[in-house]
Structures are given as structure tokens and as C-alpha cells.
Image 1 (cartoon, rainbow, N blue to C red):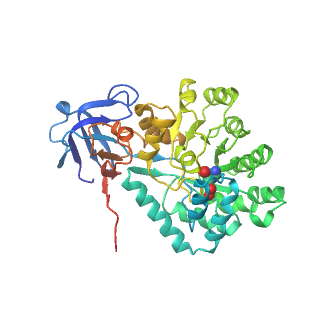
Image 2: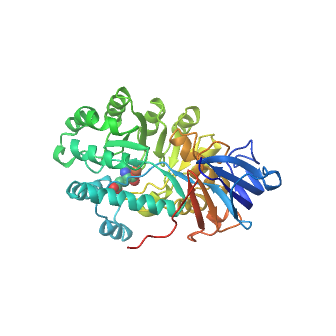
Image 3: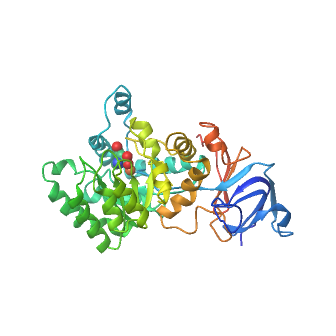
Length: 398
Ligand code: NIG
Ligand code: FE
């Protein structure tokens, strides 16, 4: 039994549990929250807090508390960076899938220790901005041992690990894409599946087409992995329809959509995971979250941290862009960055602060969750708990 903590005098508490508070955010004003044994013990109005509920009391002084962010899309196992590519892009060069090869070369050359340190640094960076669950993909190894190594490194650090051998065709297989697909579905899958929960494919011009995506997802499912798909990022393609057809947990990016794609998402169980920091950093057209939400699609927001198209772990930044440019309301954006991410990872224990949820909570230095969009760029995360344990929110310098 770990000692419990009462966070008292919360101005606004977002629980994402409509049985606890108002609306989809389960909002409680003048609230209290009790964390203990790694889970939420109690949440509600402070006048109703159970007497002697906790050993320790923290006065939030009217600030807001929200669930920890669930960032359901990250490419964290890599080496090097792509500063030059970013600068060139900001001077007018377009983003293409081809830049991935630069990171593949650097990643293969890196030691496992250095790759692990990078993942640790990015997870710590995410924590400081309130992210308590982070998904992590492979995809910069593209050989059997390099993909397996990336997944092993990821699995040592997070439960949400995704095999993305199908990021692009490995350079050694240039002009022999179908042979590479056979490798991804064969020996590479065999080596990687024990380390992963999910299988992902970058279904895009310059990466993998519809038939190849189908073959890879089918092989992954047969090996016990659950699909998620990089779909319709750079242009229209079959990715979203395939994601829905396979009952994928999510279709990620979902930027270039026909009415049929939107209808398919609305009729299925696949979450549309929007990654607005990628469009921001590639100066590309944003997805239209309003269109998806109005059609009844479940929308998640994620950071897509990677060295090429979106080198950020900052979910408050994604929320601000989603509100400003994807036409989400602040409430919708906060929900999508928390419970939406949990839905995209098929997790019921995170993304909310209902009783029994993992005690992942963020205290904001602001009176309301709306300030995450209203005060863009301001570091509002004052304290973070994961499984009830207070996390460091300062950069460790040695
Ligand atoms: O999600 N779209 C594919 N993968 C990444 C980009 C990877 C890279 O450019 O290195 C993304 O945006
Ligand atoms: Fe991605």
C-alpha cells in the first residue's frame, strides 16, 4: 500500500468520466482528487471528499487538474537529427517520405546505449509537458536485427510498442519493394512480433501501396499483432479504408479524406489520430477535425515525435494548434489528447481520472484546461503524477 495523496482545492478538475462530472470532460468545479496505490481512489466536489481520505494534502489553490496526456503516436528510436532538411523545407522545399533514409543510416550506426538514451530523453521531455503514456514505433532500422533492436529498446521503456518495418522500403531493396514486403511479413515479423503489441504501415505514395499494406497487415494480424495505419498523410490513398477494413485501432494523420473515408471512419471502430505538429513542421495542409467530429468519428491527438516531420513531444502545443487550425473546441482537443489517445491505444486504464484509473494526473498553473489553447507556448504544466508518483518536471543537468 503506497501512501495516498489528496489534491485539494482544485478550481476545475477534468476527469473525462461523465459519471463523475459534467459533459464528456466529466468536469468538476471546486474539486478534490485522491490518489493512492497507484490509482485514483476518489474524484469529485471537495465538499464531498471522504474524511481522512489521505495522508498527504496538496493545495492546488484553485488551479486545474487534468488526466495525463496519452500520446499514441511516436517514432522515438532514432539517431541524429534532420535540422538541415527542416531548414531547407522552411525555405520552400516540400516534405517527402524519402528523408526517412537519412535517419535510417544514422540509427543503424548508433549504439544501443545511445538509442536508449534518446528514448529516455524524449520520454522525460514528454513527461515534463504532461505526457504519462507514450507509444513508440520502430521504423528506422529496416533490417531484421535493427528493427528487432529498436523494438527491444522501446519495450524496455513503454508498453505501447509498434512494429513499423514497413516505414519505407529499405535502401538495399530499392527497386525490389515486393521482396522487402516479403521480408517485413516473414523473417522480420518473426523476430519483431515478440517485442511489439501493434503493427503499423506507412501507406503512402513513396512508401507502401494498398496491396502491400494489406499483405503486411494480414501477416501482422496472423502473428497476433493489432493494426494501426499511417494513412492519407501526404495525399489521398487507400490507407483509411484499409484501416477500417482491418478494424485497426487507429488511422493516423487522416489528412486527405473523401466523404467515403469519413463515412467509413464514422461507421467503424477505428480512431482517427490527428498529428497537427506534423503539418505545422512540414508546412502542409491541416486535417479537418471538425468534419470528422461532426460525422461522429472518434478523434485522438498525438505529437508524432520524430526527427523528420514533427520533432516535438509537446501535447499542449498540439492542443493549441488543433484548436486554432483544426477547428476543434478547447474541450474537444483536451479530450482527444487524453481519453482519445487512450481509445487509440485501446486502453481503459489511462486518459481519465475515474475511480480505479491509473493515477496519471497533471496540475496546471492555470485555472482551466482551456488555458492550454488560450495561452499557447506557455509552460503551464506545474506537476505530473504517473501511477501516483510525482515525476520530475525540471531538466536534469549533470
Ligand atoms: O509520421 N509518416 C511517416 N512517418 C513519420 C515521418 C518520419 C520521418 O520523416 O522520419 C510521420 O510523420
Ligand atoms: Fe508517424
